[in-house]
Every structure is written in structure tokens, then in C-alpha cells.
Length: 193
Image (cartoon, rainbow, N blue to C red; front, side, top):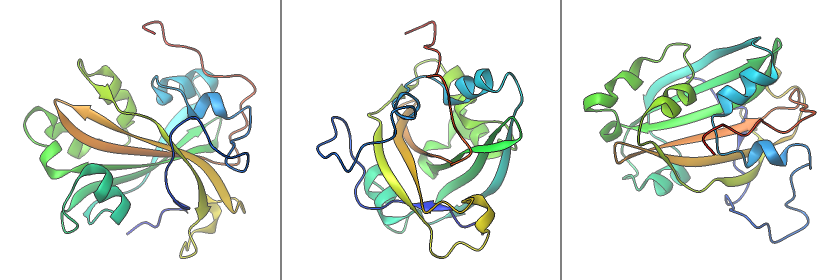
């Protein structure tokens, strides 16, 4: 089983931020707060030099805070998918998605077998997809991590998460922006916003 490179440090928070200590870097904030498809924005930023590397996908017990957020019983299993979003040959974003069993039935069964296709691309192509509030956290390096290369020596990373409602059923997507991601510009605003 894969180990997440970064784990939550304290509670996830919405905006506005109450303290000066909890302030993401100015150049990263537009990306953290971006409500469009992060996959599409990263593809555009990379000039098409973009890929997804699946680190792991398996049925497991979500973390306690993920269960609370999704209103799952603590013993409920979910499909947990962990990937790296790679732009210009560099790992830019680590993403962890938690897809409860009840959310993967009927027309949503196809989400069980994504392979190296980005989840975000599929979500934003679905009519009627609804995104909940984006929450933020300064994640800390996982002390149990074996594959240290995923952190690139960084002790922390800024992350965001939100619940997506697909056909009225929830799934949780969390993303951590890795140290190799150094955007010069904010993401382009989608045409439909």
C-alpha cells in the first residue's frame, strides 16, 4: 500500500484566514482557491507536457478526518486513489481522492477503473457536478513515508480539499502543491465562469 507524502497538520480551514501564520504564498493562493478544473489549468500551464502517475488505488479504510468529512462510518471502506500530476517532467501536485462505495454505483461505476486518466478531467466533464467549499491546510511531511523522493526534502506543502457531489453522492478530493510547482501566473479562468 502506498503512503501519502503529506498528511494534514491540524484542521482544514475555509476562507478568510484568521491568522497571519496561516497564509499560503501569494503566487500559490490563486491555484489553491481555483474552482475550475485543476487538471485543465495544469495542462495549459505545462504547454501540454502533462501526465498522471498513479501511486496507488485500493479499497481501504479512509482516515478518521476523511470519514467525518464524508459522513462515513469509521469502518466503511472506500476506494482511495493517490496520484502525482506531472507537468514539464516535474511532480507538481500530489492528489488523494476518497470515493465511498455508495458513490461508485450505477453510472458512476466507471470511476473504479480510471487507470492513468485524471479524475478531475472526468468530474468536470460530468453535467450537474457540484463542488463544495474549498478548504485549506498546511500539510506536514508524513513521518512514516518510505519513498522520501516524493517530498523533495520539503517538510510541508500547502494543500486544499473539497467534496464533489456527483449524481448527489459525495467524493473527496485533496491536492498538495509540491515544491517543484512554481507558477509564475495564476490559472486561466474557465470560459464558463
